Amino acid sequence: MTHVPMIPALTIPATAVQADPMFALAVLACGVCGSALLTALARHYALRRELLDHPGQRRNHAVATPRGGGIGPVIVLLGGGTLLAVMDSQSSPILATFLIGLGMVAGIGWLDDHRPLPAWLRLVVHFGAAIAISIALIGMPHGLLPCAVIASSTMVVAGLVNAWNFMDGIDGIAASQAGLVAVVLLAGGTFAGGWLAGAWWFLGWLLFAAMLGFLPFNFPRARIFLGDVGSGALGFVVATLMLRAVVAGRLPVPLALLPISAFLVDAGMTLLSRILGGKSWWRPHREHLYQWLVRSGYTHLQVTRWYALWTLAAGGLAIATARYWPLAAAWVGIGALSCATLFWMWSRNRLWVAARHRR
Image 1: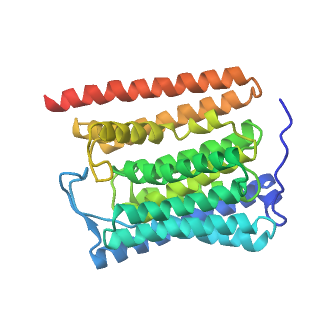
Image 2: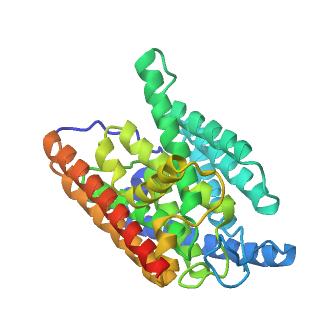
C-alpha cells in the first residue's frame, strides 16, 4: 500500500478522539442526547405553529405529521463544528466555511418549511454554499483544469443537497442513509487507511450521533419529518465529508461514489427520466423508485431497510477495495461494474413496480 500523507490533526482533541474510545463514546453520547432533546423541542414547536405535512397526492404518509425536526441534528452539528473551530486555529478557516455553508442550506430550508420559497432561490443558496466549501477544501482555482475541478465539485455538493431533499419521502430513509454513510466513512478510517482525520473524523462521529438521536422520532413510524431544514443540511454534511476524504487523497473518487450510490442512482435516474420526459423536474412528485415501491404495497420499514442494505453492501465494497490501493484497474473496474449493476437494478425494479401498481 502506498504511503498517504497525513492531514494535520487538531491540536487539542483529535488524537484523543481517535485514540481514546472513552472520548469517542462521550462525543457519541452528547450528540445523541442533544439531537434527541432538540428534536423533541422541534416537534413541540411544529405542533404549536401547525407546521404539518398533510396527506395528499404527492405524499407517502397517511396522517398529518409535523415537519422541521431536522433542526435538532443541524444545531448539534453547528455546535460541534463551532467548538472544533474555536479549539483548532489551523482548521478554523475551512471549518468556518463549512459552518457558514451548513447554516445557509439549513436556513433556507427552515424558511421554506415555514413558507414555501421559489425553487430558483433555494438553488441559488445551495450552489452558493457548494461553491464556498469546494473552494475552501480544494483551493482557489487558477487555470482551466482547476476551474473544471471546482465546477465538478460544486455540482456534486449541490446535487447531494438536493438528492437528500428529493429522497426524504418515507419514514427514516434520509436520516438512516446519512447515518450509514457516516458509519462507512468512520469504518474506512479503521480498515482502509483513514478516510477522515482530525476535525473531519470528529464531524463524522457527530453526524452519526445526531442521526441516532433523531431516528427514534422518524423511524419506524414518523412522529416528525426532517423537513427541508434537515434533509438539505444532511446532504451538505455528507458531501463535505466525502469531498474532504477525496481531496486529502485518502479516498478514490469511484469508491467515494459507492456509499452514496443508493441516493445518487435513484435521484439521478428519476431526475433524468423526468427531464427527458419534458416534465417540470423541480416540482414535487412521487416517481422515485422508493416511492413506487411504497405505492405498490411495501411498507416504509421494508423499503428503508432495503436501501440501508444497499448502502452497507456498497460501503463494504468500497472499504474492501480501498485496502488494495493502488491497484487502479481493480477499483475502477469494480466501481464501474457496481454502478452499472445499480443502474440496471433501478431500471428493472422501476418497470416492475410500475406494472404491479397498474394492476
